[in-house]
Amino acid sequence: MKRNLLVYPPGLPDRRVAADGERVTERSYTELALARLRNMCAALEPEGPAFGDAEAELLCAVTEPWGRHEIPTRLDYHSLASNDGAPIELSMGFQRGSGPELRATWEALGERPGAAGRQLAAREATRSLREYTGVCLERYATVEDLFMPRGSPPQWSAIHSVVWAAGRTPMFKVYLNPQARGAGEAPDLVAEAMRRLGLAKAWDKVDRHHDGALNGEGQELVYVALDLAATPEARVKVYLRHADADPAGLERAARVASRHRRGRVEEACHAASAPLSPKPPITTLTLRGAEDEPATSTLYFPLSPNVRHDAAGRAVVAAVFEEAGLDSGPCFRALDALAGDTAPELSHMLNYVGITGQERVTVFTSLEAHPVPLTWPYPRPPHVPTPYRGLGDPSTEGEAVETTNGPAHDDIVHIPGAGTYESKQGFPVFAGISSKTAGSRGLCMHLLTVPPGGKEVPHLHEDHESAIYVISGRAEGRYGQGLKKTITIEAGDFVYIPAGVPHQPANASTTENLVAIIARTDPNEQESVVVLPEPST
Image (cartoon, rainbow, N blue to C red; front, side, top):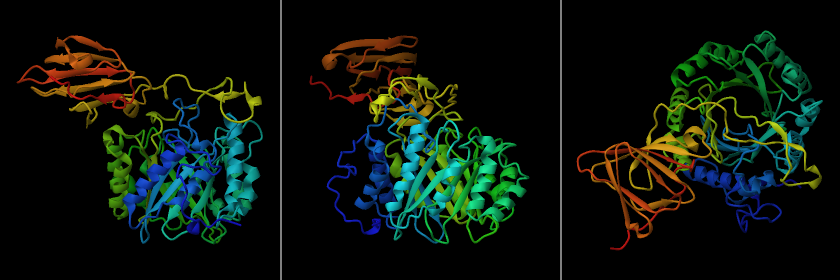
């Protein structure tokens, strides 16, 4: 019997309990996603979907067993499900005439390492969805074999998503890799899939529109998505990524859709002013069985890493909402709920924003479980022989698995200027280098300005060393147990502070700022700060 999640019995004994009773750790991908989904739902009330025990149970079930394990400190595989490399991404959809939607997208991770393990996990994950109300795998079964590689498996095989909307049964989708047998075979593979799905006529029109060059000349087929439903409205969506794109080229790609208004995409590009490189934009064409041509097209503007931070990304999102004629208020309430106390200038959770005519806007956000690479393409760790220390069959030890040594990217990151944030120590700090701004793994560096007569609160940095260079001004500091020791430093001086040493710097001047560069062996600058009470006199 299929489960109808709208009437699933309430009352999970613990929201961090997975299907087999094992507790989901607070630092697991699933727990992080659940916390964010609840925050988003609260911000979208009353129009948005509810996110209660049934929805939490669903997410726990579909991310079993990998979703319950502690988030790794070293990312061995950068999933394409999200820009931070985590295998779960969350998004919001806003459509004219209906309430907001929430979506979770995930890539199933295998208990065996490497691409072969992910391929097996993806296949099993798709088939496991048949137990849910409304899910039909008939169309998927028709094309499943096409997306199975003949030789070595690709980096990814399938990604899944579920959409929640008020008053509706959750809707599932699978994203298949058209390059499963290599980029060169993608056009023929997709054409055969469309033939089997009864969409040959519509796809032939797309192919002729692109002069038979769907995979080449700056664009590539990147996803084929199927709604896992048997309704007449069930869609097939094809995603084209455009390298070296310009507004005119994106307009031409969208023009094949029957409901496209000429010039609409170019208008959206100019309104959004979104950088189209280095990460390229994506066009999606939507096809249905009863139609002889694509009905709609959606343009996805890339945000991180093309924009410097989420403050710039939010400006693009706001412009897209305005261009679509939709209210951006609910979206920004949800983004504020996700950001919490983190300033947008220090965050890179925004991945894409999509616009479908004047009907719909979709915003994609990462979990920020890992530093977001500020380069494109995202890192693809090399295959090296290493003992397998994950889950599953011990006989897999010694297989080649993806590993990463060093930083999350191999490019220099230029940060021409960044915003400020309120530090725990008591003063605004100019953000510089950190895991959030540059993807650093082992250090942070920033600029501190202390006003005349100002002093920081007593504090220490657990397990992290600090180095300070005074640019201008004069500082007097107390340090050590009880802050009983003192030090005076002036412009041009360097200072080293060992990990765990209490200290309290102050500006000795009543007329000039104290300006210093601070570096620390903590890439998450504020995480190691422990505020201390003022010592008794």
